Image 1: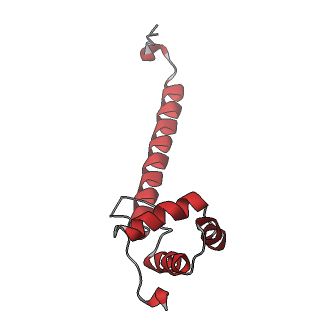
Image 2: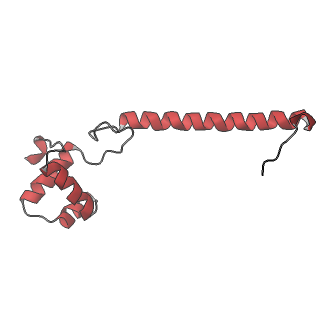
Image 3: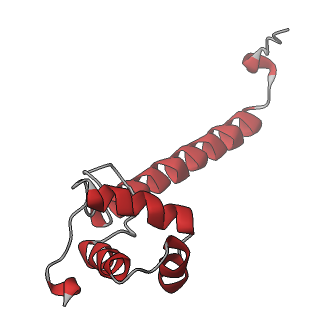
Length: 109
């Protein structure tokens, strides 16, 4: 059910106040969008350029995963060391193994 409001009958002060509230809300949303856009530009990293994607898996961390796997560590042990779940480490390991993730050569030493 839609309700029609005859704005010509409302006090002008009320309308001005509501317009200001709407303007303030719109400006706040625009500002938040700009901050998110800027954050995405800074944190884009190696995640295939996905807009605003957070970057945890850096080439250096990938190298650590590869090195620890070569030493026989389990996904759970690696996850504990990196502060990630064993499932997150497992998924990243498959990306590394299949060549979908970059590895820093310096991190392997």
